Image (cartoon, rainbow, N blue to C red; front, side):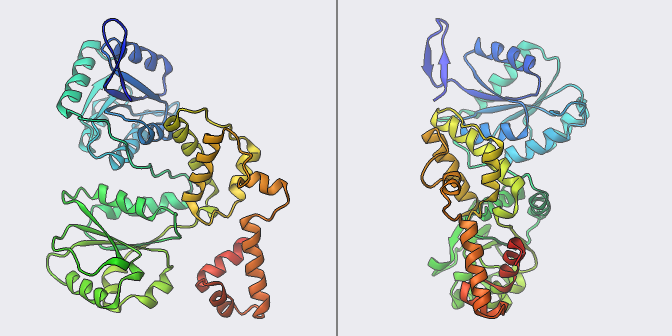
Length: 402
């Protein structure tokens, strides 16, 4: 809960909370003292990842955003990218840009990208306070909001995928997002909708439960599109043939070849123009490390507990895991580490390794190798036995050197 400090110094509930993103600790200290005197709490972040974690784990009413965090950078590109990610998480979030080196031109660009206002460094204390307090008053927050989990992107492969999704977000193009359970399909779909700047609310539909299509248009996110009944697939195709059609973002755990086998060809003509395939987490060690740092900070803030140390050995263990539940599984392991204060739980990867018990990665490799040998390395038959598509089996064979 945010705390308001009255004139006597006593803490009472309901103080507004702002997040100040700036890599200069002296600026952070000066700002904190300034806002404390006006009963405003302030959180600090020195860069992109820390800022997104604070936003996802804390009740933030307003952001003050510097535009450069890396030494020598003056273009403001880092801040503009962070501004976009913040507004994806919280479309209603007021962001005031604080700029010095970047100047007025880049501040204007930030306003066009969604910032509420800007202030130049060195700022005038009274003007800054008036701007912040006026913005908070206009927002009239009844209660603090908790943001959806941030989409943390570190690997080159995922960066390219997200960049393509961002490029297509402003269009009305239907698209399909594939990937294993827990890989982040819904998070990416919500990001696309947020960047689309559509005013209509998004409608989320579970395909296996769908017996009728919504009357209104807007954006429809179909979960498990492959589970949509054949009659409903035909009705959906008919709806997409209309002049004013909804935008469909279809999600599936099936890979594209298997999806093509179960979807109505006419429906696939609409949906299959763009297919975004999220790779499994075990193939993205850079994302494993970035997500680990994010979730450790997130859960330590959320639960008010110390953040466990993520050393080199622990990092190697996390990167070696197969993560069958993908981001969902990693998140659970890291929350458990924060709650218990130790990595040494019975289900933890490191203890599994030290006790000599096969890891999930070892088990999967063994199952694949056994199936291949049983079928004389006939990939089609082995894939059928394992419940995989041929491309999925080929990727796993490459991963394990089979």
